[in-house]
Image 1: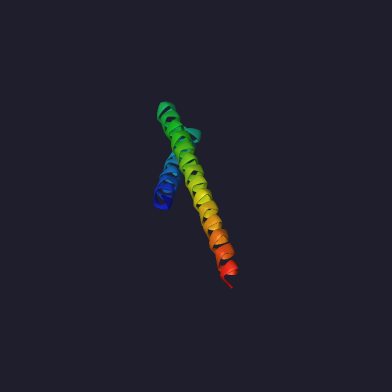
Image 2: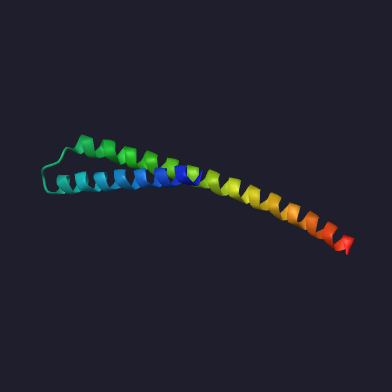
Length: 83
């Protein structure tokens, strides 16, 4: 799951840099506004998807950590009772 999150982060950053370049071209008078708006929308969508994937990944990690702590606590109590 971490690889997917990193891939979306890289994609989002790449699209952001393309959008920035198109915006700079518009400021210098040689850019297409519609193209810039399209890339801006793509930047927003990829950033939202990357953030969503990161939240899903964090929630899954938190769930795994809680299960592991519960197992360790159960085994810890059983191990203490054996001694």
